[in-house]
Image (cartoon, rainbow, N blue to C red):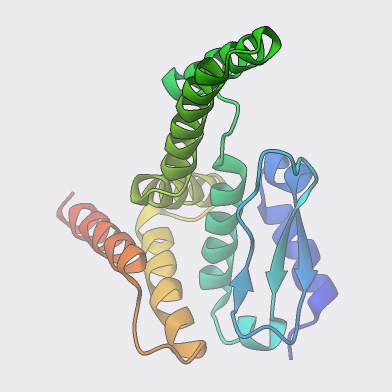
Length: 196
């Protein structure tokens, strides 16, 4: 039987300093998922919770648990709402325009600026929820694992096996589309590391 407190301490030691500062591991024995977290919204700047069902969690091997946690932390801490780029700049400009038009009482201007704001916020939302972002989180988790003493091939295999095993533990019939893309990307990494 896995001791929750020891496991939480061990996982905290495994995380990067940024991960420890911005996330919190919480036991949630009644959830059907092995590990779960919610998408961090821009107005919720608090510490981001990661919920773990430790009864299900212990069915994974230690390296699988490590990589699944590192990947979850990497995804959560990688969501950027206020990172300077085209859409963030467009959002700020359109909000300023909407405010100006509102003060001037120009209804058409408010509607146009509001529409532009909505479009740019939607683009930020989609980028943070994209498959590219999912794969970036996997890559970041692998980098942290290597810094923590894992060799690249075993880290990739642990993440790959952990990802597929979680679907089985949770009683799902298979992986969803995003998970399948991640699995394919990880398999390519395994093959390329064997060839090198």
